[in-house]
Length: 450
Image (cartoon, rainbow, N blue to C red; front, side, top):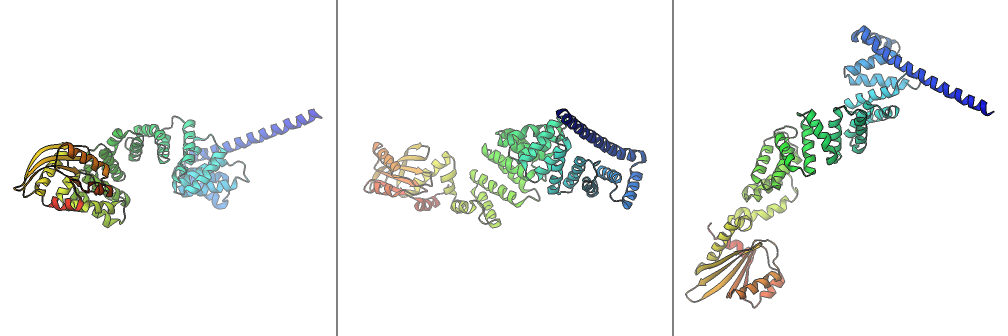
């Protein structure tokens, strides 16, 4: 009983192997037969004969193979898709048809026609039928990348790379896919290889530069961005990235050059153009060119209301734009600021004789001790100029008052573009300390000739 059962199983297994072998041979014969006919008769003759056969019998498998192969070679994707779709539809009743190849060709054709959803559907079937096929994995990876399925795409492309390590085309596609997936560190090796293979490919260069920036290799990325600045497609973005990198190292003159080059480019997307103008405005302000920065901010406001913090910046710098001395007070170097403070004291005591005794520069302010003489009185005074626009608290004022006593000054003045807290006002009540706040400071600055 057991022996008869074993014999039956062995016979069935051999039968299955025999059937699969016959089917495989028939498929190979069918494929090689189509290729032999094309080579023997020539493309034109083979195509005309196959078309005549299809006119009589639209389901002629051999003829469909021939026209499908010829349309594929000629990159006639619509006809390629139609021919292989018919073959695929016939595959359920015709075991000679290679489903993996039919769906691969369908997927390639749909991909090249821009129909990514259809391409993915066909190529998924192809990969299931031929999981170790380089072409199936490669094209499925490309199609998945184009519909934003980056993780799945990367997996397919990595397998394609493993199946054909010598294939250089995979490097660029896999590098771009990893870049779009924001896996910058993983993308870099493939992008580097791809750029070496295709040094003129601007997309590869731009993707590599962004990846370098994200991986902390800004100095190397900067060279690539500067090289790409004139490019019609990637130039604007490259100018923007180069400008930001130059800003980071405080090379504002180079950043301005980047942004000016970008503004000369044509067909720049609105969002990119706004970002460039915004960065340009901030760079001008950082360089103390308030009028230029303010003008750029006003342009952005007119072009796109509510863009980022432009309204706030305009409100902040409108007064600065009209008052050069205020620009010096808040933004100039220490030397110019000290000179302005000296002149401020002279204007404040315009009817008195002022002699500067000492100037002390600190991290957040400048202190000046001076002797003031008047026909009726004379006094030793301490001025402290805060450059902040924030609120000054009572702790700072207590420390100032202590210094006022140590220096044996008669009176003290705290000057700020910001305000002093309520507790600071309460503290100086009855003490020889006066506050010169924003409004009074601006009035006095307008009287100073620099």
